[in-house]
Image 1: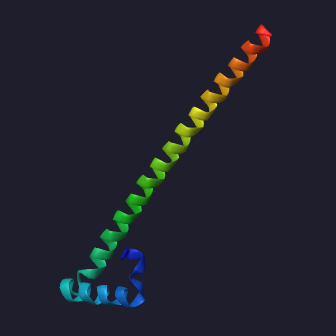
Image 2: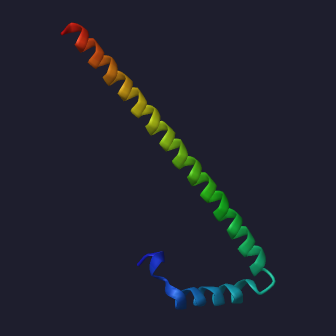
Image 3: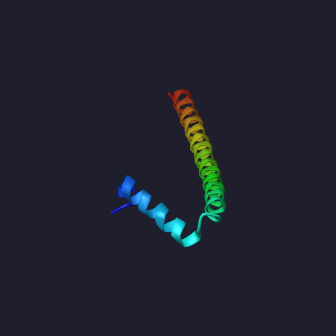
Length: 78
């Protein structure tokens, strides 16, 4: 059972439990901290994804150049 299977009733139950534990005055602070953490996490994962794309693009470029050089040297031999 993953987090994707919580559903609406489960979400309401979690919110009620959080309200009981932390009280109404602390919930906005907790929500703000959670949102900030989630935003930073998204920025970090986006940065990693763009780094991976750049690395893959560079490898593809290097392979293409090597293949072109090999083809040119074979044409000169033949």
